[in-house]
Length: 212
Length: 269
Image 1 (cartoon, chains in turn yellow, green):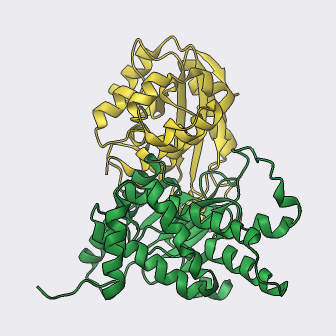
Image 2: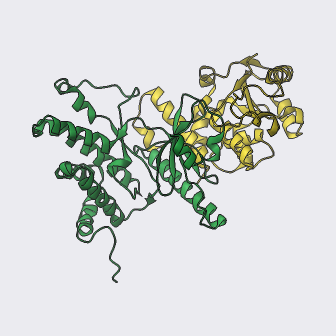
Image 3: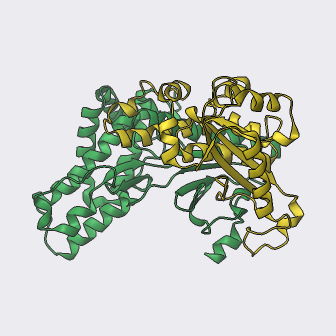
């Protein structure tokens, strides 16, 4: 199982986040159609890995979406679509789906994120205890999510690591989406690793500002 | 710390679980700054929070808070893009009144300079020119940072040595071997590092010489009161400012006027 549970800082205890990566996905059309049909069994965030830079980049979007869920300021139908929209640098939702969402016929490598929000009461009773265990048995939940994904996504499951994500990034696309071409701050740095870090920061900043 | 926690309930965002508890770093009239973590327990961040003001109408309060958080984030992004050394923005929720920024390591320039001057006194020897060169070098780095800032069309609004951090040259940049440092290791190192401007809560986007001159004037006055013994070196900041920023001459001319009358513009006419 490559589906991992991700514990982010400052996320309420009743919210659980899972994510994984599928390489060489063959049935993007099918997955896309399930999203369009609003099939409740396919409430996942499907993110095209070619427009994602790193885990930090992805998790920034996940956090923004979860924060919108918690504060009740979602701009899209659910937290999963919100993740895709959070990756955008402006408020154009259709554009965000097109650029970062799953695209039939195009998406090859797919990041899947699932956010489960358990009912408030279950987790919030014990304030001092760690958020690990709740009434819903997260282990079962993780297993059943994984079973569902493994049967319906036709692709090679991979760990969602920076090492696995880096080679999938289509930089010409990313630079265009995040307006990274001709940025003075990047002009001075030649070093590849350092430049990549700077570009990542700029992308995350663009997402946080949302076209302000 | 517990007393402080009781006095100021943390913002809602910080009440959710995290690997290490947030630390209240400083508190100003408008906002509070916490050191906490963002996304991962290993990523430190500075979270600026503007709490709601109970004496304002809620609708007005929400609007002001949102506008001010967004304005600060916008200015930071603009500066960062242009290569001005400022903290990067990681996340924000303007409606909730918080802004999460990159945590800048190091100490405020004020602390570094005073520590350095304090050491000089301890040695009971007047600082000779060679030692002074370290301080002048820091002044140049300050002048360069401010010059870059003004070049992007941003004025800081509260330039003091407390609002500048001295970030140690980290893992990213290779340390260059310094032949002279060997003789007085500790003190020479005390002023090393990159000057990073922080706290853009009062910053505005402006291209006017007047605003820029006031920025420099505020720094000059702050310098005179926090580091009176280094005041005579202030010229080094202006010199470097001049070389970094092309339009500096007209700003410096304006600075003369500002010095004559003070920060506030005359209300005549």
